[in-house]
Length: 328
Image (cartoon, rainbow, N blue to C red; front, side, top):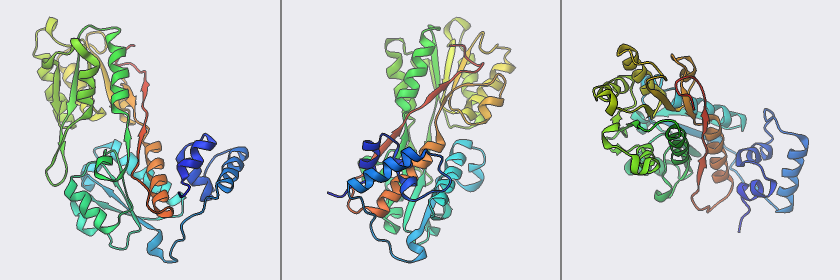
């Protein structure tokens, strides 16, 4: 059985991305000489060898596919950050990159050595991408069951941690979840909604779970719907599925004269840079987009160097960042 980067990472006690960057002699990697030596020694002990590459530029070119159209990407810092960090990690590894947006999948170059697809894709879209290159990794979409490598945040763990923290202080906790569709119209459910319901258990109230479309406008509308409930029957704290909807929810609260967090606490998901600059600054569940990007590139490099690997799913943990919109 061929030795993989994951085998080396497990034995060395470091991340897959670190192993990949050390073995590719990445000059920008900040790692101790001791760790570098340990990784190289283990690779030698395990007789790790890279699969021979063809000496063509196309063999080293990967395509980054962003599921949002280009203009829409500018309104969502989460996906923008993932794409920028994938480009940075790939270029640091010596790969040539080209970016294509999912509304133009027909433009994916046919000579791509591999593809990193960011976001949500239907089975038909995945089939279209894999027809170009079977070396396909999806970031932020769980496609393991369909036979592809993927990197996903720990939605369940992050939501459970935040819900339990809120329940320790508040009796009535609600959520504004999200609903979206792939660019070819296939609905994508929000895994945070089911995780929230499970974490709430017997304290879950269906009327306190609202669903928006991840836009500022929908966050505003769904918070207005919660505020329409009698004060004694509305949530005292609300989890919101992304920072953009949280911005809209805060606007609705400010207009209604509801003090945050004194009268309603807010926790958002993603913790992009905007979370720090809203008023009040958002307590948020941070998804480490840099780490997700690094893991995605490492998985693709593994695909390009080792043949016949089983598909893998990497789950990246989240961090709860305390600010001023919820006092935990």
